Length: 162
Ligand code: GDP
Ligand code: MG
Image 1 (spheres, rainbow, N blue to C red):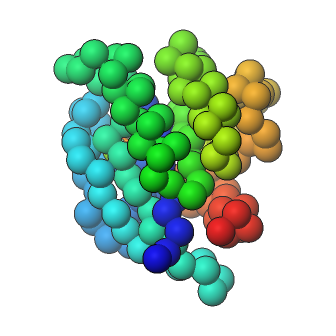
Image 2 (image 1 turned 135 degrees about the horizontal axis):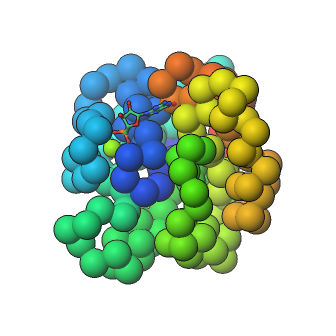
């Protein structure tokens, strides 16, 4: 069985954009509309002799479902099924209370968690990075899923856990 790596994070942070970039498949839907990716999608990733299965989750924070149930569902999925969790937040947005709640749950689950700060497309966004130390998950992995910046460093770290 290949190791499982789960992408967790609120809707619209860019999970599916990263999934599509890494799997080079268009199996995950990317859309500006929150809540588009409803179901989990699995894709194969290979990086320097390491193969793993990436799980793109639907995300939490969409309005249709009770927030607490979505948070719990995502966190439980990650804790239960994955060997490693990539917890993604939007580097252009303020930290939300339920982001902190999920981070706390993941820290306590004992699973390895990497904090991925997405949408860091250039120096302008980098200035906001220190804020994200609040999650208590270090080091931070700033990336631009859209442009590919930082993705290699993230994958180097991922395969060290597998
Ligand atoms: P998901 O709901 O977490 O799966 O998010 P999506 O992958 O569907 O992306 C949500 C929106 O964020 C889309 O409009 C993407 O084009 C945009 N997006 C994703 N990654 C980046 C990035 O690195 N930089 C910027 N500026 N936008 C991004
Ligand atoms: Mg998605």
